[in-house]
Length: 123
Image 1 (cartoon, rainbow, N blue to C red):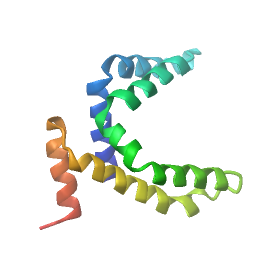
Image 2: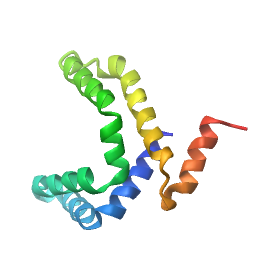
Image 3: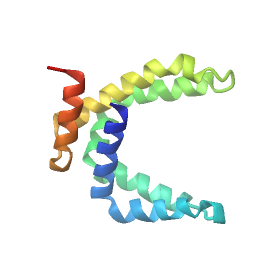
């Protein structure tokens, strides 16, 4: 299910931030050549936060879960116990994000949303 959610959000990002999306991915593909992609990454992040409806909903409605996950990562980084202690929080965050995308399907994503619903509610 998480890969489908990732695809849904990526399609939304590509649809609403196409130039920034392509430029950033071109840059990271050349990273081995010493490319500094931080400016393009910042531009893409800004576009995502301001223009991508699915991400705006996730950021607005799942911020508590995002904060909990970030806190868990920071707390468990040194002990290297992130997987053991934070995966449950990540699952909650992904479920919250999935609900945000599922409530307002984009036409480009409707088939994938049906696939998510079928996985969650088999007949």
